[in-house]
Each structure stands twice: as C-alpha cells, then as structure tokens.
Length: 459
Image (cartoon, one colour):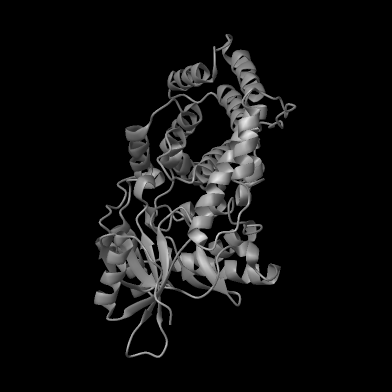
C-alpha cells in the first residue's frame, strides 16, 4: 500500500497517536473536503488482512460554538452504542490535535440520494423508530453526559437555548435586529404545557443509510436533554440543506411508535428555536470572518436559518410574504476588478481534494462580491425604503438602519402585539431575502431551500 500523504506536523501527531493507541500503521489518509477538519484513514494491522477504516472528527477551531465540547459528542456516541443505537464505534479521543477517532460506518448521507420514494420512506420510518428508542432511554442513565434535567416547563422548552444566546452575546460585533427579533419571540412563546424530558439529538435527521435502512446515526455534537418534539423540529431544519421529502408521514410514524402526541404549536416553537441557533452561532463569523473560513457557506447558513423561522411565524400570523423585486445590474468603477477576480478564481481541477475545496470556497466569495457590486447598492436602497415606511424616518445607511431596527426590537414590552410582529416579519423577510438573492448563484444545496410548514392551517 502507498504511504500516507505529506501532512503538517499537527496531523503527523494525530496519525502517530492513532498508530500507538490502535497498534497499527497509517497507510492512507485523506482529508475530508469540508469546512471542519476531518480525515478518512486506513490503518494496517498485523492481525487483519484488511486495513481498519477510521474517521478522525476534529475540533471546529475558529468556528467553535463554545456550547458543547468534542468530548461531549464522544460520550453521547458511547452512551447510544451501549443502548443498541446504530452509531460509529469510538476507539478513543486524540488529545492533540483534538479529535474523536471512530469507525467509518457504511452507507451514504442525504435522503435526496435515495433510489426512489419507497427507499426514502423506508429509511425515514427506520429513523423514526430509532429516534423513539433514543427518546425512551431513562434519564437516570444519562449521568455520564453531565446535563441537569430541566426544572420546569420553561427550562424544558428553552433547553440549551440560553447557552447559545450567551455565546452569541459574548462574540457579537454589530447590530443583529433579525436575530434579536427571533430571540425576543422565542422567550415570549415557550410552551407551558410540555413536561416530558429525554435525550434529544437536537440537530436530528443526520444519518447514513443503505438498502432502505439506517446504518448509523451521526453528528451528535449538539445532543442534550429536551422535549422529544424538538427532534422533529430538528428534522425540519435539516431538511433545508438535505431534502427529506414530505415529513408529515414520518412524523405520524413517530407518533405511532413513540406514543408521543404531535403538538404542532410546540413543533413550530422548537423549529423557530433550533433554526435560530445557527445564526446565533455564525453571526460573528459572517461579520468578522477569520482567515481561511468558508465565508459563503456561513453566510448561506445565516440567511436560510433566519428566513426559515420568519416563514413559520408568517404562517402562524397569517402574513402573506411578497417576493422581492430584483433590480437591473449597475456598473460601478470597481466592477472590472470584481470581474477579473471571479474569472481568476473560476472552476479549476486540483489533484488534492482539500485544496480544490479551498479554491472553490474562494471562487464562491468572488462570485458573491461580483453580484454585490452590481446589485447591492440598489437593494440597500430598497431596504432603506422599507425601514423608512415602518419607522417614519429614513436612516442614513444600512448600518444606521440596523442600529435603529435593533433598538426598536429592544423597546418592545413582554406583551404580544400581533400587528407589530407581522410588520417585523414582513420587513425582516424582505431584508434577508435580498441578501440571499445576491448570494443565490453560489448557495449550492441551499439555493431555493424552503421550510416545511406542517400541521393545521394558521390564521
């Protein structure tokens, strides 16, 4: 077999740790081409004719959310394996560079790759059964996770939301009126009639599958204690990037298998709550991106997971959301430079998959900037028009508009005002939709993503 590729000293230490702990020799290592450091590794061992396939799941680094540690995810995986849940087996935890060393499970991700509707429905039904089993694990057996059970219905409903909000506020660098509006709504609308607490995946709907069945539940870094219906909300969130098809039938399967009654008001709440966690986690990266960050990917997450909750609230309030008006392109004195940069960073085939990923990420930024140059000024004027119509006076620029809108949200009392909420939903949906429209050609899997609105009609 070939030797592993030349890697930095940091990753040489990781491979040496794996060789020492698992008694073998790394003969292949391929970095996964994505925003998070991760490796697929083949380990040759004397006692086996076939190399052991290993996955190294590294720490987020600059994009770390600061709420759960990587060790937390490892403990969740080990707990679920003890309870017969199909998850990758954990071999250990590498201390430097930090990472979980686990099995490579068979199967593929993303239900949009299912052979047909029959396979998709079979996999979903299988996953709903697994989810019901996870929710059925006794709270007394979750002590290794170090999470206290919620003390009351409010703590149950919010779950870990306040931890995400604290992390957001520590790193906040600019006004975020849309986020502040959603945080305000979440705190005023916690369900008061829910009582069952259980282990929830939170970022649910992530699994590998083949031949119509789930082979492994994956990506459990956000698992915590909460309302079981929060995991149905998590699937609605996951559906934005990995389409699962109509989830109504899957939710009915979960209701039948778990005995948990579907409460669509609670599901709506948890969908708004969980979707909002994404912009809470990435807002500072969008505003002040560190070197090397896949900025367009984060901006896409920021837009889509703000727009989704706004669309749920629009359905609940009976608000009709109108499409934005796209302006004609306009040349600026800087347009030739944007054209040149986008052409330089256009499609290119590189032998190293991770280098190709980095080049592609840079090309996406260049294409976004080209469109921002052509359309951004006109769209910002439309935003200012809307803010003036709502608040009565016209802000000088977009920064002043953001400051005034955030101050407007913070001036609200704790009393509900559906008319005011409807005005905010309409305005913020237009602002986010305009930003997303500029980004749309480079959004890839997120382009055109729509949140599923389930349950009784809203009025």
